[in-house]
Length: 132
Image (cartoon, rainbow, N blue to C red; front, side, top):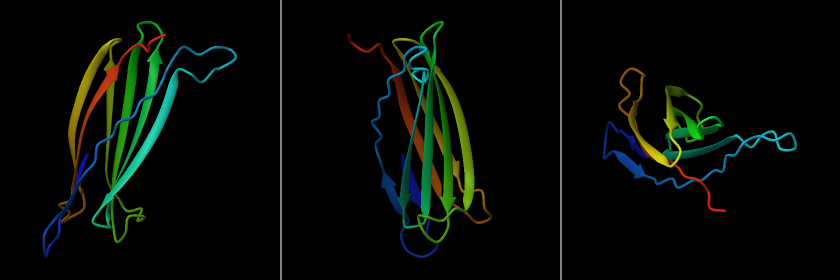
């Protein structure tokens, strides 16, 4: 993920982060009914004012063992990294086949008048069977 905090005066502030996250999904059972869906979130901020929050939900399709991945990305821009001024939201759904992978690449732009800040998200999602 690359966040660009565009500045009117001075140089733009840019940060790039790598995300390496793994979740295990497996069929639900009566004793463990919440195994087929996992969620995680991460947040990063650049320039003390442009914050990205990405929520990833992974669901197992028990019929074909594909992984249904929902990415919800939100851009906040204000006077600090804790500001809740929501400026853009993007949601992507990917179905990753068993033993397959898919990539997603999208750009979020500040939707406010005069907002030029951006967040570029590039992810590769892999669905592999865990070794026994």
